[in-house]
Image 1 (cartoon, rainbow, N blue to C red):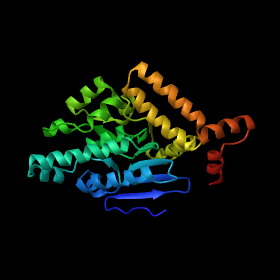
Image 2 (cartoon, helix red, strand yellow):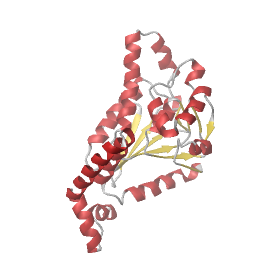
Image 3 (spheres, rainbow, N blue to C red):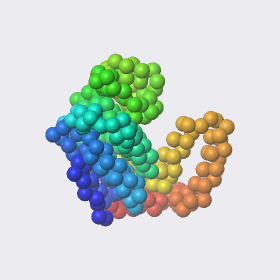
Length: 269
């Protein structure tokens, strides 16, 4: 598999089909600039269409996950026209949407602190495991700005009440508080972070990849629709699942008391 190369990212894929995508601007605490945003869009698009990729682990180089927007990039944006600033903002929105819509699970390996857009990226992860040393804050209002493009994802993750408190005050959250508010799934000691990620992957890799992708779409759909609409959608999707190769294989393996094909493949690796 020929992997794309990047200036601001590292991309690796192991034999199990687990991709590791690393924000690689440690000298700026992995702050978001135009290049990093653009390359994230390219990487996520490539991963979403790659064959045999079952999960993506997102992390940061160095001690910080992501410091939010690069201040130099923000300063340059102040010199641009309104149309150019809108375009730059839309690029960030597309990047977050693409990450959120990845067909395979996105697991955040949150190796350190995150601010602004970094909190937004945590919020689009399906699962996020954070080192206990991290601090998190939505700092935009301190700069006279708004947490605009990240808002849909952070509000969905934390709920409106928690989002109001953290957005309006730029409150600094410890890792345990971030877990209590729903931003991160679990908090572990920094030296246990990789082991915790491996435990999540061990469970995930037991599951049928196509069913996982369809279930991720199911969750997004039912969250956005009313019960009557969801009942119709769910009945249709379950009927579809019974007709898939994975569905037939899973049921046959259960009654045959054997591992289904995807678990056999995982065990072989």
